[in-house]
Length: 172
Image (cartoon, rainbow, N blue to C red; front, side):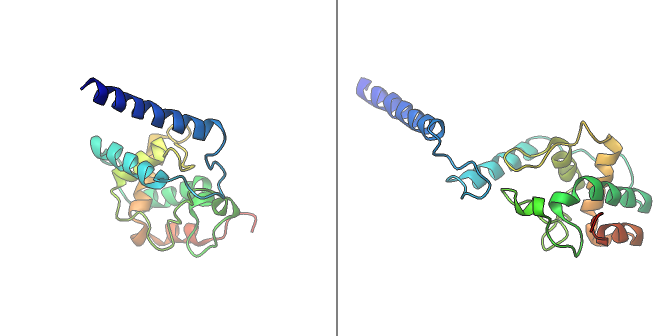
């Protein structure tokens, strides 16, 4: 039994040492253009989904009305579109250089199938290992909800919000 325990402890220490050497000697891919480490995407995704599942999702304290959805579209244009894109517009140079690539929320699969509370959590807290910043210190709670509700209802927005999201970015 002592040999088994010693072997187990030795194996764990060897693996930990190997991982430390891998990172410490500069073998880990850290550039955005390099392929991901083994299991990097799946581990990050698993951790995110587990974290969100562990806590109850907040319910919107504001209505998803035309004024709020249009305000959410403006907030999205100012803070999110540079990475996540606009309706009918090409991916930005910033988005092209990110790893992992940020989802283009108005092309293909968006976030309309996510509950507004889940999107709120992601917008407020950010997501590690993805480049997604947390906005809870730079946007008000109302603004966080406006953009979250707009994304949850992106397939049925009022004309004013659609117009904001379809215009080319400023300076183009």
